[in-house]
Structures are given as C-alpha cells and as structure tokens.
Length: 335
Image (cartoon, rainbow, N blue to C red; front, side):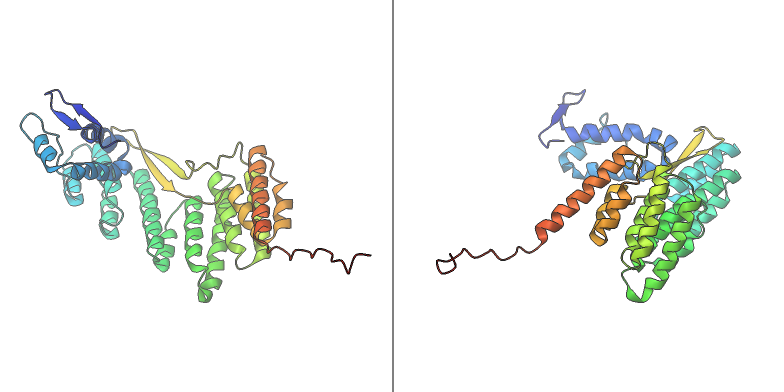
C-alpha cells in the first residue's frame, strides 16, 4: 500500500490506509482462530507490525472513546490451556486445547510443555495427528539451528513417511558438506530414499527423490543417476504432476468433534522439481541427464527439463575460454 493512501472513517477523520488493513486483520482474527489456528501467529505478527508502524498521533486517536481499534490482550499459552480445561463439553475442550497448541510459536514453548498439553486431549486421533505436526515442526526448527542429532531424534517420532523423508533430506543437506560426516550423511540420505519410495507416487515423494539425486551427485555420482531414474519413475506415476511453487505444503485435515469440524495441519516440504534436478545433474553429467530427460512422460515436465538442460549447455559454452584468434596470413606465407 502506498504511504500516501488515506481514507475517512465514519467520524470524518482522515486516517492512513494501513489503519483499514489493521481493522481488516482484527475482524478476521476470530475466524482464523476458529478455522485456521496454525495461521494465527502470522496474523497476530502482521497486526502488531502494522500497529507499531503507525504514528503516535494515530495510535492515540485509535484509542479515543468511540474510535478504539479493539485489540484484545493475547492470553499466554498456560492461560489458554487453563481456560480450555474449564469447559465442561469434552469435544469443545479438546478443540480449544488443540487451538492453543497450534497457536503456540515453535520456539516459544518448551517441547515438554506442549507435549503435556497434548496429553490433556481426550480424542486419540486428534492427539496423534497433533503429535506428528509438533515433532515435524520441531525437527525442522532443529535443522535450521544446525542441531542435527536433535533433528534426527525428533524426525524418528514423525509417523508420516513423506514428512520423515523430507526431514531426512534436510538433515543430509546439513551433514553432506562436512567431510567427517559424509558417511552418516549418506546413511540419512538412504533413509530418505527408502521412506520416499514407500510413501507412494506423490509430488512430495518425487521432490524428495529428485533432491536426493542432487545431493548424491556430490558424493556418489553413480548412485545419483540411479536415484534420478527412481525419481522419474515416481513422476511418471503421478497424474498431472504439479510442481509449482505454491504446491510445496501438504495439508492434512484432521477431524474434530468440536465446533470447527476439522483442523488443517500444514507441513511445508519444499524440494527440487524435475526442471531444477535436471539443471543440477547436467552440471555433473550432461549426457546422462539428457538421456534421462526423455523418459519423462508428462509433456510439460519433459519440456521444462529439456529447456533447463539447454540453458545449462548454453551457460557452459559461454563460460568456456575462447581460443586464440588465428593469425592472418602474411605476405611471406602467401604462395
């Protein structure tokens, strides 16, 4: 939004356009809290960022009687749990505890505290699915903090094979550049490949295999080619494979007996698509990458992969040192 954008409120006061955004976020908060609780931290953060960006005069104006932008004080995690446990309806109580868990920032609460909260949920299915989401999020955070042993421990608690495979790929990325850990990195990669193959023909399994092939190219080129073949076979078994950037999050809907009916649990699992994988493989073995690309049955993915190979070929040609220019024949050399 342009900083010069303004609007007049019902009282005729000229206010920055960002105030309208702030009011919109506040009006959405109850619905997000109810139906998309895992998005609540992001909404809250955006709301607070907008609020502090306003001038002191505007902030003071917003809290004048009759003009307040109502921003309720956020309850702490413990307070939310305490409030939820006072609800007599067991289904609604489970739902509110789950909302508190989903709303808690990954690093804000200790894992032990969050797990204790999960134990308070009566619905076993909801409890199991929340545990999977918690362990996945905590493992991903551990990878980001380079706590790879902790990440492996947490990943082992994740039930879903696709999610576990992705976490092992991310762990291997952190290990593979350290010479003394390359053997273990290969073991973790092997686990990722095995889990991806077992999970079936999905975009997320294909991303794992394509990324694994790229990582193997750094330590075991022959293994990289073999895994690339497995990845292509996986892609070929997917109907209309979609590797677009907005298709990197797996959403699992978990049924709830409370008011909302279900909870969306989101697992962010980015990885290479065929185009990116072939682009990287071409840098290692162009001929093999070229022959493998023809095995892709989906026309769009095959075309994109072929274009990536062509682009890599052009870049390598441009980077090659130019040969010395030939000398023009002199008078003495002309017959």
